[in-house]
Image (cartoon, rainbow, N blue to C red; front, top):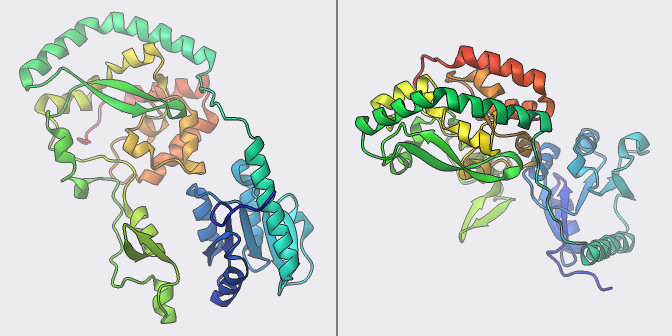
Length: 384
């Protein structure tokens, strides 16, 4: 079996010496696609962002032990092979166990490393040729949780049906537009469904959103860029060492990632101008959420879980650490609502961490505690 063409096998090379990076690219750039990263933390961030990598190459320099430990802690990265360039004496076998597949003295033997890379390329080619198509299984809520949701949502809908009818009439009298607001949401297992709420906004709310980015409570103040170079290249007095071509425009890859991180994942506004007069009351009392009882009855949501997100927000949370939040059911209320709701200083990272925490530890007991706390958090002072 002949080795694959360059570009189909990607190796992440962690090295802060430009000469060594150039040497490896000169030696093997025609065989594999080499992605240089100067720092172990940046390399780990690159992997966690979901970038496809078939091999990691690094040296036993400062930081490599923590890097290997981080790989082993994440199930998704445990099978990622590592080739180690040894410089500092004997290898710590306990640190390298299960992750380092080969080791070479520096300077590396050209032919021996080439043989090893060809083997890995052919191994990947063979695995892909024999792999059966993956059929994802739908993630389901625990049986007891689902029974509880059906029983309580059906009972609640029967009891509050007069209230629902009154609110529907008031909405119709308050402003033009439909009574219910229906929007696509991403829930458990990235499943997309239609979520229902009482309409609390003007009918042109979606058009107004594009001009309201500066009002977003989750915004991170961007660092003003005084140059087209990152701080490291400016300090070294060199041209950009990590050029990224995006839409035929040449930019610094580090600056690009900094700008991406400054963009908020979620959208939330204080004193939202799109909300109607009646809508403010419905939101502050959470009455606008009551139609989601139909979503709970249908199985789209649960009483307690992580809030279902719009697709444009959910697509930003596909990295391994963030995607864990979608292992929990979508919920009418949740851990974030009862701990952070109405607090203007909450960051999108804090919200994600609370969602991930719930996905790891949710149980009937935790759900019951959250539901009790939700009663206290229903009425809030801030118009968000």
